[in-house]
Image (cartoon, rainbow, N blue to C red):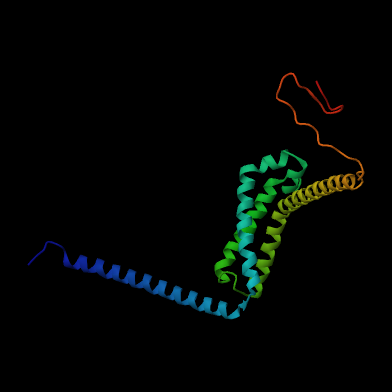
Length: 207
């Protein structure tokens, strides 16, 4: 039964498609085998990292993201508001802080899958991790120093307030201790609600 399609042309198209799919399939299969072999060799050259590295590097990534968000939203405000706010941006260079925070975040985020979430790393990857930490620390140093100064100022104010309260209590206690014992102090009469009675506490006279 003739379907109206040229059988030879259809067969030729099918052969080319099959060849193309076969070539593509073999290329992808070979590429995946090469990548798998490279990953196995790469993991074999890695050394385990201490648990403290995982505990510290993830917070550094989060702080880098926080720094990027703040510099994008309020970097100019930090540059112009006060001396303390300019400390956060290294004397009014919020774009530099933004670039360093992005660089530190990018390096750590790129190394996270290669190091199996910072659990293993080769010597080269360890060097890159160290460099990323230095860049991130430089970007966050201004903000951390400003927070530290503010916290120390708050602690100092609290200490001074506590010293003042203790000094006042000491003066009051000394006054109570030095009060004469033999003096008979009668209680003051209560104030009368009558409009014709006026209490005079100094002379204790009621008319």
